[in-house]
Amino acid sequence: MATINLVEELQKPVPFSGPDMPDDELLRACVHCGMCLPSCPTYRETGDEASSPRGRLWMMSAVADGKLSLLDPDFDEQMYQCLNCRACEAVCPSGVQYGPLVEASRAQLEQHRPRPWWQQLLRQSVMSWPFDDVRRMRTGARGLRLYQQSGLSRLLQRTGVLKLMRLENLERMLPPIEESPLAPGKDTWVPKAKLANAHVFNGCVMSSVFPDVNRATGRVLAHNGYATDVPVGQGCCGAIYSHTGMLDDARVLARKNIEAFERAGDGAIVVNAAGCGSALKEYDHLLKDDPRYADRAKAFTARVLDVNELLDQQPLIPPTHAINARVTLQEPCHLVHAQRISAQPRSLLRQVPGLELVEMQESSLCCGSAGIYNITRPKMADALGDRKARNAMATGAEAVVTSNPGCQMQLRTSLIRNGSEQPVEHIVSILDEAYGGRTATGWAIDHQ
Ligand code: SF4
Ligand code: SF4
Image (cartoon, rainbow, N blue to C red):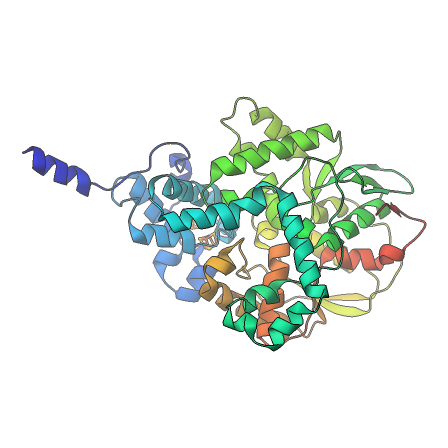
């Protein structure tokens, strides 16, 4: 009898349990209407209901109701096949908050699904090590800069060594790293006539691989009246952890950033990476059960503004240099869907003299970058990247504009793979150029 009970117990579906369970009320908000299906990139690619938001929400509800096991391989597959692009959330008439639900489902998988030792080691070394302390990532970026500038990169490409080591795609993603990272606490930009204070969120990938964009952000903000600095003590936003179910690790970084920007004093916290901005704006949710930080997280979140959002609050100080070119806009998922910022970048680009904005098809469909998705799931990521590249190329634009480092790298690789030489620019770099770039004088003092 006892044996039969044990067998029955072992066969019972494993339910959600412990901390960070998907919120039942949020789950029940889905009325299964299916309106989100056409906006879902994985559904568009596969045509499979299981790969749709409705299918995934059904699976989450089935685990919550004890009808499906948390350890079912199909559940695992669907929770991680999802790009967490939030396109479904933006179109849902019932207001289903899909992002927090998929992140909580992944947190449950991380807590209850045993991982092989090698995967744990990989997570600690490849993932956690550079993100826990951004100085390590910046040191790595300095090494990459040396690698690019010494000619070793070209040599390994020409001799086929990179292809042999299957590192060709990873290498292609990297732009030339031409500048050193900003110096928190030292780099400041002083406007001619001060409107308010602004503090730049430095980021991890942005500060290491695109330090030129962070400098351009400081200059453009100063042109528009913001006394701008880069507060010390800040780190990675933690999105990499929240998106992979490692919510406690994300909380450690969130507390660190809250403290750093509290010390920095009043003023907006300005973000030029859509993924980071979305994560920073959700610290209130991430820390809602932390008695010491819940209110501080709310105050922090209220100060966060994407750079597009801040600059478009009022007409731009007129840019002085015409850029005679046609560009097209790729909308990062975490800007357009998670933060609902879509009109602002278009409005800013239209204020640049000489610039023509041509719209591409499916500008808000995920490009396949999605954090580390393009590394962990290259097949789906490449399919979405190719789709995006074809849409960008069809516009005949001379450059693609976006505002997220992950999208910049994914678009660059996808365009090259599809035979295009269209450069990919951050919107702030375009605005900076329209103000005369780093050589501009008389507007802002750039201490480098
Ligand atoms: S998530 Fe929203 S749009 Fe999608 S099926 Fe559910 S209620 Fe409908
Ligand atoms: S987050 Fe994106 S990929 Fe995931 S279900 Fe929603 S639309 Fe599909």
